[in-house]
Image (cartoon, rainbow, N blue to C red):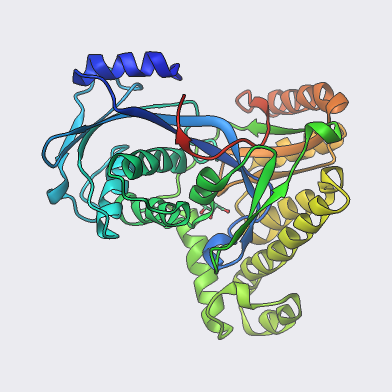
Length: 385
Ligand code: GAF
């Protein structure tokens, strides 16, 4: 469901009685480039998209928090006492919103009791950060309702803490940063070590371009399996190379890494090291020659994730290959991998042909039909309407 603000406020009243004190929204994201670099202290270049999560919220007396979702209109709200929350104490989707309140309090910001009704247009499991959108919508709502005055950068850390320690997914800081720091017409260049960020112009329309998202509908989760394994490999690789994080390795260090490490760990490292370089090159391209020149970097990033980091899948590879063969300037999987979405950068006039080619390739391979839509860089989280 994706209600208008008025409808969501009405649904809130039906659910909890009384009117909400306000509505807050936070977007999902697409990552232009810089994958699995965030938890290696590296660089990322995501942008906020218009698909967003909205929460209607009202302060209530006492320490009870009740959360409900428009996706489960007949379920009882999940109710907890803020004093009873502890790491990993909530299961299921409510771990995200309640984890944010827990993390805010752990960071020294006391929250009031509240009622929250969540609605979203960010597809779940599509690699577009539905989790971060939910965390950040709750974070900005709680920040305003408690008048805590927490900075956006700290709110991103709070969202990440909720995801790492309440949900149990060992993710980095990229998605929350995109959702909180995004701005229309720009990507967010973030140094994940220093936390410093800078907006980089990304005027796709002005350049006659579109960025297509191809949602393979292969669902993925970062709480299990592959994501955590990749993170462990990176940490082990950094330790073996005697550096605090893979960020500290340069392309020149790769020869030594190849000699020292087993082939798999070496390839994991090579992805991260070369991906950091590609992010910096992408920023230089966007501030210089413009977005039409990004293509080769995107395609090289995909090859690195497919061959070295091994987080692609048949559907993502098919989306990338079909897009390129139909004239896309560049294409890559975006997000954590193992499913989710690919992006393809294309001249506007080539988009119909690319769509048709991707649909045809999926049908010929017997894959589920993908959802294909274009995205533009939008604004970050804040009050809704
Ligand atoms: C997921 C994670 F949540 C991010 O922190 C990031 O690591 C990404 O995968 C891969 O770049 O979206």
